[in-house]
Image (cartoon, rainbow, N blue to C red; front, top):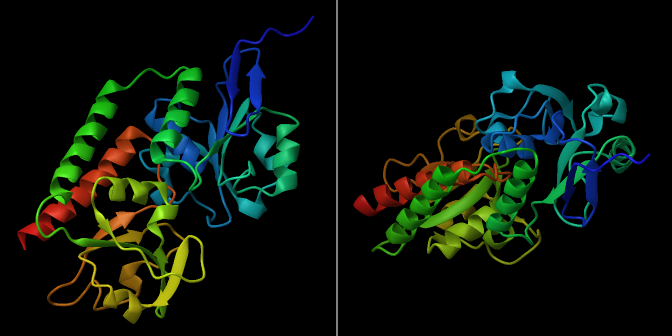
Length: 293
């Protein structure tokens, strides 16, 4: 007798996952796990990518308390046995296009999917942040999450505030980058990052690096980055980026006058209304402060 399907979800590969009961022991890539947490779904465990280390990156975990979930490791250090040892009944992964599971070796991902349903959400540049958020919200609802109208209202308010400020006089130029040591920085090409595209849609003047090599980033020296004269610096705070404090004084962020305001930025954002509203609020605060100078 065939098992009755009680739960099902079609992921961004067009692949339908089904189960005889609603999954409750969820293993997720850290970004996905933190997003589900904000929707009220508590993952059993999380895993990272090759950019991560032996402990969860706090830039990626958002509101998810590290002590509340098990961390199985990251990237190529993971094998299928490690991922399956706790008997998860669902794996939630992300992809940057093409359906490939990010953070796991292809053979590992294939072996895992032979034993447990795997849902893949596309978080790549081809998707809008709203689309990504809707997909995670739909998955969370399928797993038993309640609607969170207050979170949506907060996001709407944050968007309206930033849009109003960006339309005001003397809007500061915003540069997003990932510090890469003493000699260089990776400047984000904003149209390739869903969260940065939102800023542009709201009227924020986000700097577009010069054309050249690099689809997502333009790698330049610090002098070239400083010459762009941004008023606000969105700085990658993931563990694989160099912290600004480790670089010492720099004319871009530490000059006595005219230094850019620094706003923390996670290029792998938690894709929930709450997290996005917090990011927009930080940018709005910086824009408002710049306009008062």
